[in-house]
Image (tube, rainbow, N blue to C red; front, top):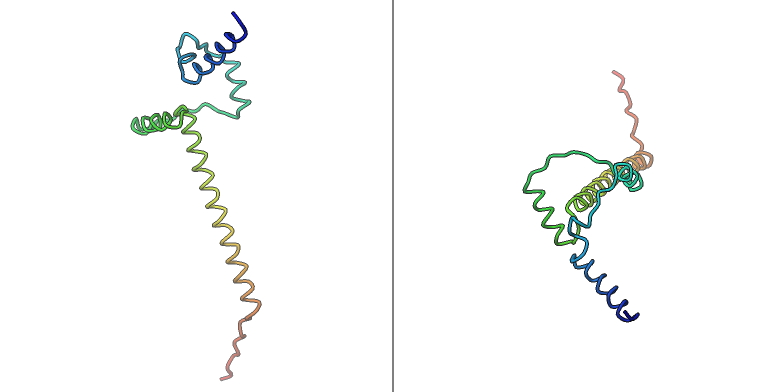
Length: 122
């Protein structure tokens, strides 16, 4: 086998991996040991949980996962991250608005002190 033939074979193998012709069959998969799985989870900061979801929601995530060429569980993680990020931004904006409003009120109070009420003598 010439170097050119080997190069073509390697290039074709990459295309086969990308297209899914290679590697998607369960006979090529080996489950990681619990220890290795735990190490991977620790390295990635992941924690296994159990959650019940509507089948329709899961099916929708699977459909979208196909569109974005990713598994539905990583897509769910991404969706949850985006939701949390958005909520935290809203909380931060609300806090800044309250702080700004308090400062404005404080400045108004300093610039326009309340007139002391003069007690009327009877």
